[in-house]
Picture 1 (cartoon, rainbow, N blue to C red):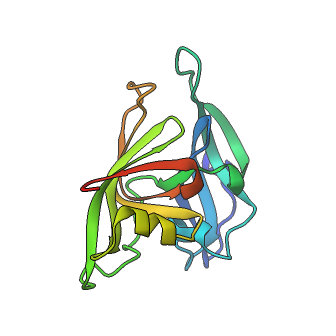
Picture 2 (spheres, rainbow, N blue to C red):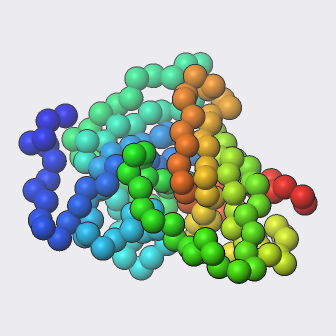
Length: 180
């Protein structure tokens, strides 16, 4: 795609490379937002749109006996209810959404399965909490997994991706946490 397909960007806007996972696909592209918006937690906020508008979008359909080439679109609209997981595409990054020095917190090794995708990383919770309590109390649509490694067990040829944080739609995910 040439730069002419990208939208004009105002001084108070930015484009952020982002990956989205649905039940049947991996979708990546550039998301346009205002500068202060943290894309990594955007879908947790009231600022999230009903449809994400991705520029220079690529869609990799997962299913069948082999992986086809990605389908490319100059602009793609993705309904956020179809998003099972998402993260920034490296090297894009944002500061952590938590204070690493906050007392009484622990990071628990976690594996989450969302559709065809596996995410191995860490779940941040209260030091005295257990997985069942953490999941029962989690009310947000998406749960963060930190220092995440994505793989696709169905198609090992899909190269895994390491990201500082992935957000998983909790009602579409299965979780296995260490020491449970």
